[in-house]
Image (cartoon, rainbow, N blue to C red; front, side):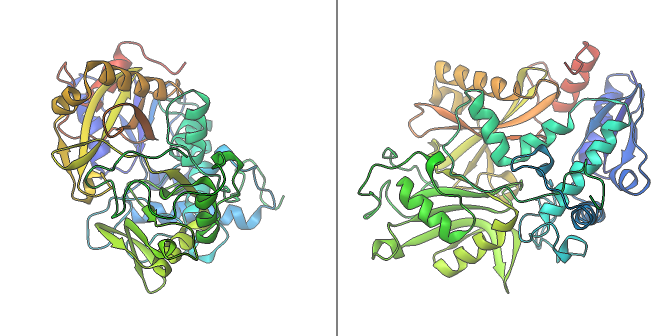
Length: 455
């Protein structure tokens, strides 16, 4: 078995996978640094089993990807249809202000903007359309090398393009929160040659922003229309209009292609604009607004002035938004929670409970791991088994990819559950072992030794 990894050599993801390979008694994988792949074009060839790992947490790789995508955008006259696979694959683990690298750069400018080529300030959220376009192009290069890919480029792209992933899960009958329509940004086609409304239950602690389940003025005079019939959400004003038509007072606004809570806002409004209730607004987010720019920050903050909230959303909007109705998460001991479930070769193998006193549960934001057994007991065996089955079915939407990290939410009261996201690079769970004593990387190597191959 000849293994290869496309990744950043200094990243712990690469080191942890190499250590698992060594424990299995196999030859060390050949490492193809993202920087070299982007500069020289050298990629794994035929006969290699190729793991594509996250390109995140490397400022030079980030710059090269944005440059590659920006160059193609400026030289191509063709754009793919909205929702094309070339729209997405997330940056993972880019830098946050005053903190170690961790989160995706996100949205602020269209792909042809000059910032796609230049350096960004530390933690700045900008230039992601070009980043995604560049990643789409380089993934095609890797696939053309002829190696056997353990995670497929189309799956990487779909899993982390939030609107497309939501649509794929919906089509497969996977429970997800309802979403509003949003336009996909026009990104370059890498194949084109250059020059060519029911009331929500009461919110558990941390899941509400300061308002009851339905606020005064939240009801609409006519029945709410299904999200698919609403106008397109392309910025703050159209978002508020769509929320009013849907009869939604709470939503999660997400950067279409972000990760690690980059560009995510939990937004609550009091009612219709122009009314006293409509002036009540609040957003919880890790986005920092500073001098007209937006940044990732490890401190979750609260905005209660409409101008700041509108400015953040309008800065995110050019590269695409994904807006979902707020899903009221279950809570234990005063902390809301969700699960990261890593599905490997069709089995839900590793689980981490993420708990928080705010709507954001990402662990890098200072949140805490919870007790899996306590959550299982609170849910009950039937609900727990159903949730794990949902995770397996969500990963099965990507049958030619070895692993997927599924983020699963139980509803307050444990009555049902929904999938929040599926993560292409969601297997970094240090010190989390499966029942047979394997970490996520050990389990993937074991699956390969037992004969798993892309279908």
